[in-house]
Length: 279
Ligand code: ATR
Image (cartoon, rainbow, N blue to C red; front, side, top):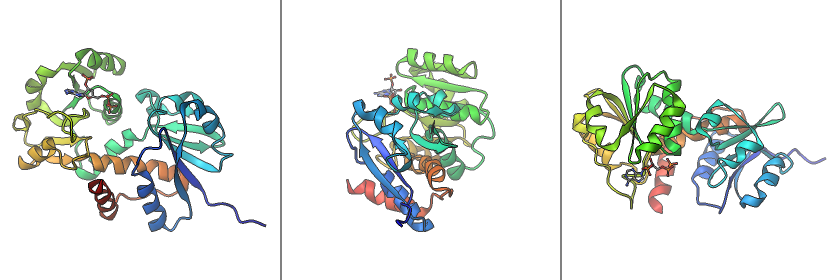
């Protein structure tokens, strides 16, 4: 008699991109003493349907999904409210035999702020920069937490208007040159654009205009401390960084696949930081 194989999850992408997910999940498997696996699977677009429909037959208890498959998996699974609202899924798991999909960027964003700046969601208006896929997850999360006014600024105003229209009157589109006017009222500032990332443009936001109790979050994690976060910290504001969100978004998938909710520890953070600075 052969012993049952330990549960394994995979990351579905194309091409097989370098990812920190194996490092994160192997760390949790090891430290929690769970026998299991996490592997990268390069799946070309033409094979996605077959791969996902046979996920269980291939021996997987679930998967992460990355570029270019985050939208394609929605029609191959039963997406939850977060995946539907964001219009993209990054995590698949089985529930009562059914393949479900969710978007853990929402939980990653919220969990990171809860850990970095407790009570960040207690009051006030939020200002979100950017109106792409990442912004959708952020705005959805802020609405879940009851934010009544979310200003959505984007270089291309039409994109902010389209996203705001989907989310209803609590989300107000804002022209890029209107940012300065809103900053003094923003208790939370979130950068979801690529500005501030290595090799990208500079994000020109005057954090001196924010109220003293404001919290600043940046989704960019290369560099770990973006110019925006450095300026906010220098002013004594609380900050939440992109690496924290990356780590927190992995929590839910692990819990769904392996049955235990893992912790984002300082040791895990140091491990991933070392990997990021090595490349
Ligand atoms: P993601 O899924 O990571 O959000 P995306 O959908 O490509 O990626 O969105 C990128 C965001 O960064 C957009 O809000 C984009 O603004 P536009 O909609 O006007 O393109 C924003 N962005 C990228 N480069 C920018 C720049 N130089 N100045 C201002 N915003 C920029």
